Length: 227
Image (cartoon, rainbow, N blue to C red; front, side, top):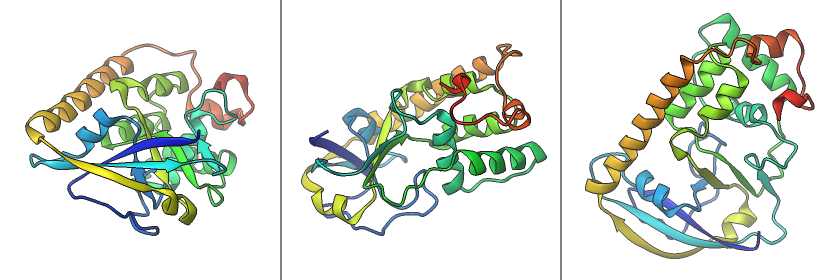
């Protein structure tokens, strides 16, 4: 990838991100979460009705180990991404099918992230995490999950994971983000995605591949239906 620009939306200015900081239950565990999309970063900077900041960085990714879970040409499927998510996020396994689904995915779609310098993948805020839970609850098919993850133009996040990647991250500048514009853009995007998802759930995909089918038929990562 070479030299790329990254943006981190926050309620504070972060000139020197620190390795080892952050919440262990974020989408991809501990790390520094950024995006290449400056518009999304502005939205993420304003989770509440207060002004935030965009922190801008550059990083030279040459020879870094980059795991791209969103690359359609890679060996990974949406189930690999989902398995990473459920291995880090905290949520209630309140039904038998949820518990069976989580267990099956962890047994068959777990990825070793220990050697990764950078991870690229979908960002699953609360709205999008509910889409993943709907799939694990056998409410939507695999195809519907793939469609749902693109609702609202969610975009990708780039997560800085290793000490070497942190060392290469160069702070460029920051700008103030006006919540009066970007807080409401964020809320509108999420509302639009939820509305589209409710419409998606009304569609009949009885012949689709559901989590129950995946478990009972012991579907593995090389199954053509997962592409």
